[in-house]
Each structure stands twice: as structure tokens, then as C-alpha cells.
Length: 278
Ligand SMILES: C[S@@+](CC[C@H](N)C(=O)[O-])C[C@H]1O[C@@H](n2cnc3c(N)ncnc32)[C@H](O)[C@@H]1O
Image: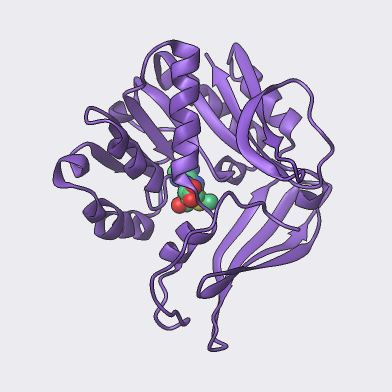
């Protein structure tokens, strides 16, 4: 087992390491922004009794969630925040042009630290920190400072959404190959230090012609446990922190339906959502 995945989608053509784009493969392997935005949109409406309008995607990378958000309603606004110039340039060259022009006009990409998103990042209904990216803030004080800045920057009835990957598999040194259509996704938990919680993980891609894209993505981050994340959110002043646990289908597999829970199961690998209310 390894990092659990939310969905598989199909690439259109035959791929090799020489021709494939690592950002496209990442989106196909790791992300499921449609399901993520379904959850965020429905949960906000349920908790706040209205549709959310503005969404800030922290650690946005290629800004796929921001793009999905502006597709949902014609007055939705999205802001993406990321430090990495190359990834934001990719988003400007690929993610945004895939949107209609009027949708593109409702996305703002900011090359900034998520802890200091600037005036454009203030007052949003929703802030997202997905794909465990907040683990990159590997000092607890830095994580709490980030959570505090999110709380202070949210709109009056805003909500903060995070995801979390936990279970015993998350803390082991292991590799998982997963066959997708046209390539193999490899999640490599290369090194885990139980004293600091620091983990080094890679994503590699393998192709039918035998070529490989090794270390297409590298993560050196701290695995925070689910209780630690909730404690940090409370320390940052969030008044209510709720874990949403995934239900099971008849075969005992995750059914994609996440509900508020106070107790979970000792699954070896699970993804949860966390919703924090100021
Ligand atoms: C694991 S990737 C996640 C990308 C995207 N959010 C996703 O879900 O696929 C982490 C991203 O966070 C960005 N990043 C790391 N530290 C950051 C910081 N302090 N402020 C803003 N972005 C940061 C990196 O440049 C990278 O694009």
C-alpha cells in the first residue's frame, strides 16, 4: 500500500518519458479535483446555508482546484497561491487556457508564501490546503502560524478545508506501483524518521517502452498525525475542528462519501478531510 488515491482518469495518447509532461501525469495520478470540489461546495452550503463564492487554493501548484471552482458557478472567484515560479507558469500556460475566457478572468494566481498571501488572499469564503501540502511546514510553530494566518484571513463565515493521509502504511518505507492507462504511477515512501516525523517521498512514472521518469516529484515533509493536525488548528484559534471520515461500500472499500466523525477505524491507509471553523 502507499498513498491512497481518489480516482483514475485516462490519458489520451501513448506516453514515454521523453514526451510525457510530469504535471499532466500528476493530475491524472494523484488529484481528483471534481470530487474534492463537490465535497467542499456541498459541505460549505450545509454548514453555512448559502453557496460559497470565493475560494483560495493554497499550495495550488497547477491550480486545478481553482480552475474547477470557477467552472461550477458563473460568479465563483478563485485565487491560487504558490511559491514556485515554474509550476505557476505551467498553470498559466496549460490550466488557465483550458478554461473559457470569462472563467480565466475569475482566477488570480499569486506567487507568494501561503502565510502571507497579501490583500487579494483576504476575505475568502473557503481556503483549501489539499494533497497534504501543509506537511511542508515541518516545524510545528510554522504550521500553527500558517493556520493562524488562514483563520485571520478568512471571510466572516469562511471555512478552512484540509486533507490528511494517515494509517500505519503512511509511516512505513514502502513503494506502491499503480497501473494507469498508458503509464505506471509509483509512490515511493523512501525514508521515514520516527523521531522527527520527517519523511522523504517521491513520485516516479514508468512507461510501456521501458523508459522512466524518476523522482518526477520529491517531497521532504513531516508526517503530522491526524490528532496533531487538529491540535494545531485549535492552537491557531479555530473554534471548531471536524474530521470527515470516508464511508465504505459493500466490499469494504472507500465509497467516496465523507461524513463528520468522532471515531474512526484502524485502517492501514486512509484519507480524511478536516474542516476548521473560526
Ligand atoms: C504537494 S504540491 C501540491 C500541489 C497542489 N496543491 C496539489 O494538490 O496537487 C505542494 C506545492 O506547494 C508549494 N509550496 C510549498 N511551500 C509553500 C509555501 N510556503 N507557500 C506557497 N506554496 C508553497 C510548492 O511549490 C508546490 O507547488
